[in-house]
Image (cartoon, rainbow, N blue to C red):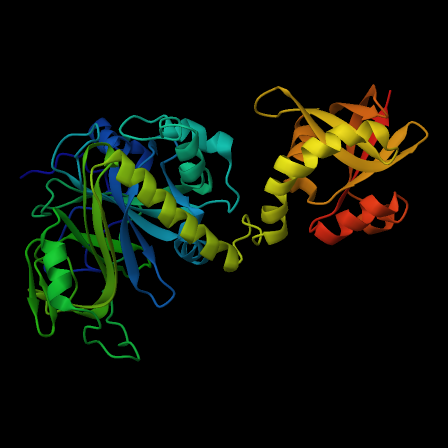
Length: 477
């Protein structure tokens, strides 16, 4: 089958084998033009496939291959976009340590692209640990997903599955090289667009200290893998970028999983590798996936994979099962991420979690009633940052001249503090009289020293239950 992508003129001379890092038998065409010159047909695949595979490098120079949702291709900058939840913090840490990745376009189901092309985009990933909702929202409007943050099914599911959508980061891959095969079996020559491939052979790796024999149930893994339509094997290429090949038939054996690969793609020798299989229903509602890491040995014609680790899951094509399963798994992962010290997830504040519902249901209703009778208590009215409605919270502090000083026991975690950060125009009720004013966060003030100047009883309570004290000043009109 002829290559359907134009081959750019080489800028260097000589007979170069761009896939020699994988195979010495083939001499393949090389394209040294920029990745931004890809054809419209290729652009459609890079932008239109809904489910793609991400291959990233582990600290021991292995590869993990797993499915992710594709959120688009920017042909002008040569950039791919996907997202990753903070619950998958181990993957993100690997990307931060080694940004060399490969994104594989191999499954046309449920997307907008057509054709049988198998495309590998190698590049460098960048992301921020801090989720940006304004950056995420436009991505979730992309068609193809059965459920999104706006269609979860009501207040409970919005709360339960909210972290899955919003506690995630946008990952962008600046593509350096594209390998475009004209069929998913990679039987023909690929066109190479962008950076030329290394000409040196990919060397074998040193075997793991624990040995190269399988460490999990090979027969069970093979059964799971053989039942999935998309199977991929990934390893580290000569220049450090992952290389991924489609896997055909798989068979279990005492020594591991025998995998059928396109002739000559996997270099002879032995190395760490990742093996995965997946299937997704329309809209990615139902899903099955197995992700393994292990050791692969090849003589150039056959390959034997010894799996060492395995992660797998299966979710039926049910909105209820998806909502319940995703929310549960994600929340467990976020707890682990907090314990692991993910920068954008502060440690779990037990005191805040316990005291907040008590304050909301018991202390605040009582406090609003007694505030007009006590000089040390007041009612602070802010504007809800989401609803736009007035929100009244009993607070304790002291009026000094035309300035009311107070200390928030939970700092920026407090709902009223978040409201006044969004809109500093507030009202304060002192002994039954409402006054307008402007709220100011005083970051440079020592809140514990400030408490010593405020009414003793309120200061004692704030000091006991508070975990992130913050001084707030209200300049009254």
